[in-house]
Image (cartoon, rainbow, N blue to C red; front, side, top):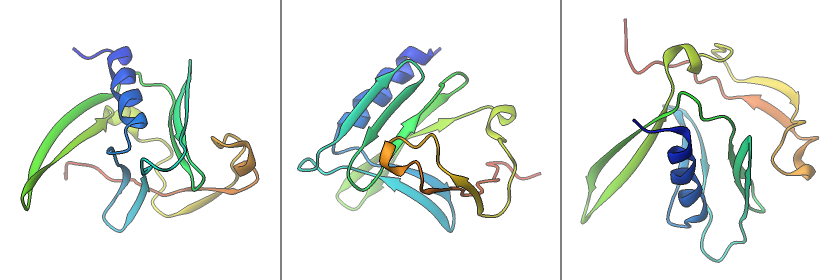
Amino acid sequence: MIVPDDIRALLRAHLADPASRWNLGTFGAIAEFMHPSNETVQLADKTHLLAATTAPGGIGFGGLTGVTPFASESATGQGRNHRIALCLPETARAMNRRTVLTELGPDRDALREQDREGLLFDVSLETSAERR
């Protein structure tokens, strides 16, 4: 069984690696984070926050309780594409159950202080991997 410290170590390594790419989304709505090797990246490793930020933006992870990583790969032309999905149990992933893009107001908890007056949006990922 993978424990939160192992997941944290995995995330920390990939946040620091310019070859790693991050995306969150579903069909028609996606957010991405990456940092080329020539771009300055600030890493934060605090008790309740693991994050990477660059001039254009950042990605952060709070509590990792209940997170299960699933690795997969696929062929891509001459090479292979490796992925890790960070999955939560259905009861934990539901969040606010919004079904449309929703403005939440100023992002008071933004990763970078200069972004805290910027607007925060819920990208409304009320999706399920299974259909009933």
